[in-house]
Every structure is written in structure tokens, then in C-alpha cells.
Amino acid sequence: MLTRKTVKRRSLRSRFISWFLKRKFKPKLMADGFDPIRFRKTVERDMGQGGPADGVSIREVEQPGLKGEWHEPADADPARCILYCHGGGYLFGTAASYRPFTTRLAKQSGARVFSLDYRRAPEAPFPAAADDAMAAWHYLLETFQPEQIYLAGDSAGGGLVLSLLHQIRQAGLAMPAKAVVLSPYADLKCTGTSLDSNDRSCAMFSGDAIRRAAAGYLNGADPKDPRASPLYADYTGFPPLRIYLSDSEVLRDDGIRVAERAADAGVSVELHTWRGQPHVWPLFVPVMPEANTTLQEMADFCRT
Image (cartoon, rainbow, N blue to C red; front, side):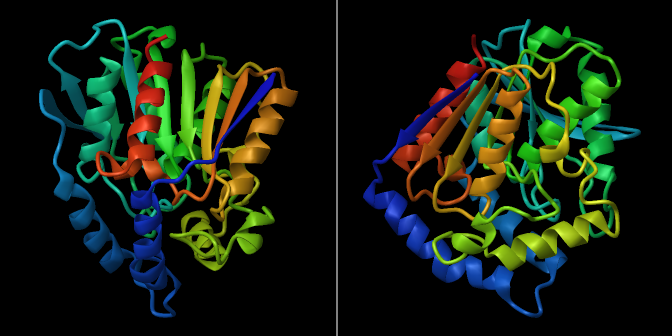
């Protein structure tokens, strides 16, 4: 069953942030001499400036085949956790740079969040990130039952969440409780029409930037492999899904098609479409009202 919800309102702060991103962030990704490693350092420095939420402790984990961080509220429910996969086109993003968002998700959901630091391209192309997500799943199963684990992720991390569900299904393992994804990057074959139709309206990316990121991560692998492009997975038996996307972003069609394919397979799906928001707008907590609203909705989704 597919339930659709559309949110039309836009705050002045949302409009300003979109204007700023379109003029300062987007041109860097479209530059001919784009250097993902140099760009990575700048983005991760800027993202971490907000600081973590008060009352949430951070515990780093590093062991063979696994790296990440536990973000733990003082009153965390011991029988529930969230596995979070960050975005960044498989090129940038870290658990540390996502602390301003993931620690707030932990605090508002009352659950411990394990923020996965998966390996990134170009140093570690596909299937490194997918392998790391599966390693994180087995790590969490040492402490939690599958039904006590919720999955969440944004952009490439949203695609990685769906990839992980495919891998869990293929392995014949029990599924997690639910999954919520923000603007999932789910089709590295790049067939969505919104890559071109929303090229001008998207505040952060161009269609060509998305195609370039896909090629860099795939490194010659089959773009229809469901571990890389979960749009092409069999969704039978997946847990309930909630998908957030903006109608003006280039990745709009990835989220819509995932929702429709999952619903066709009998999965309970909620598709929340917000008008005119920048890609993965919840990351702009606490300054953007729309981000705060969506974060609270995500936290509530991971409580039930």
C-alpha cells in the first residue's frame, strides 16, 4: 500500500538556504576540475560546525571491517536502536560531520544511533559501502533483535539502507522494524527523468554531477546490481518504508520509483513530497523550520 503526502509550505529560511546553495555549493560540484577528495575536506569541515545535541554522548567504534559512532542519549531505550547511513554521493560525508543531525535524531527518538562510517570512493569503490553496511547489521545483531533495529539514511545513505534491506533479504535473515530514507540515491544507472527536468530547480546538484558520482562509485560495475542501485531490487518482504523527497530536486524520481516498486511488492510505504526544498533538507536543523518538522517526524516513526 502506498500513502502519499504533499507539503506545500516553504519558510523564508528555506528559500534563503536554497538560494545560497544554488550559488555557492552547486557550482563547485559542476566544475570541470572537480576534485572529490579536496571537496570532501571542505564539506566535512563546514557540516560539523553546528555541534552535537546536548545530552548525547558519542562513542567511537573501530574494529576490523567496521567503523562508526554510537550517539547515545542519557535516557536511551535499551531495547531499540537506529542504524544511520550518511549521504555524500559515496564520495564524502562521515559520522563525525553528521553529528549535528544524528545526535538530534538520537535525542528526539530516545534511541541509540549507530552512525556508520562506511568506506568511500574513489579510494574504495563499490561494493565497499554495501559490504560495510552488512557488517554493521551483523554487529548490531550481537546486541539487538532485528525487530528492535530501525534503519535510516539520506541520499547515498538512503540508497545504502535499501541496499542493506536487499542484502538481508538475499541472506534469508529477519528484517528490521522499519526504514526511513531521505531523497534516496537508488538508481546509479541514472534513468530518472528528474535528473534533467529538475537540473535548474535543484538547489544542490545537477544531473551531470549525479552521473559523475555514480560512475566514480561503480568503477565499472553493473549499475543495475541491487547492492549499488536498489531501485532494481525485489522488495518482497521489506519492512514498512517512509520516503521523504523534494519535488524540485534531481533525485526526485529515484524516491518516487522506489516507493511505487515497493508498494507493488506489497510493502507498506509512505511517500512524503515537500515542495521546493533543498536536497535532504532535514540536515539543516535547527535553523530551518522544515528540517525541524521532518526530524521530529522521523524520530516519531522510529518510536513506534
